[in-house]
Length: 274
Image 1 (cartoon, helix red, strand yellow):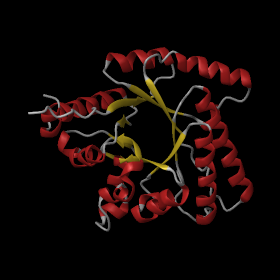
Image 2 (spheres, rainbow, N blue to C red; image 1 turned 90 degrees about the horizontal axis):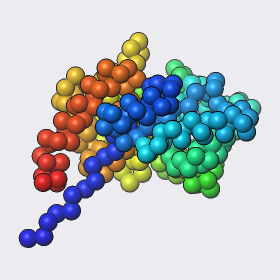
Image 3 (cartoon, rainbow, N blue to C red; image 1 turned 180 degrees about the vertical axis):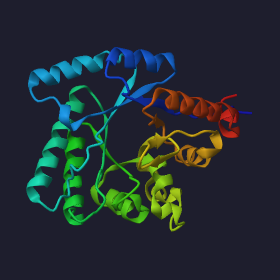
């Protein structure tokens, strides 16, 4: 009987939880991570060619780890109703795409409406138009721009999230903690699967933790059962980049232990890797 080709296990990545890049790389390798999900800070973006070169040199210290990029920028929106604000946001993202390409990065995750509690300052049509422009800019530089679902707003509603993805051509970053926390799932109007079913082939990254609380941030799972069903969704669609998006060291390692348990002992992975 022919042997079954074992599918590749997902790469497990961690956030840049340490400011010291050498410490970050050593910690990642020591604890079995394969990559880093590097979050930019809007206030500390490189401003000059010299700054950019220094930043690129810092990232080189991560050595064999794959690095993908993330822009968790509060209130910097491509679809702002104020055209000046929208143009400024687009300029920031275009500059970041150029930075990512400079270090041969291939993936960038962005947000719509992060840090807001109302969609009032946002224009749907402008959002779709400008997101599409940024996606095309990324493609010209070899960078796949992905949109992440949030716990609130348009991207927290699977039917609107799907329209944004389809209208812009963006890839998808599925945040399973945001999906758990959002109203459209908690009211059973939608299921978590609805965030990916219309575009499973576009899901290029996943952010993994249990849920998000407004006063405590990202909460790690306490046991595999907390997130197992959502991990099965990722497995079923073949998403191969799993970011354990927990920013405290203890919670991160707790999450890593649970993910390792899933990959080692679930019937699918055990059967596939005998």
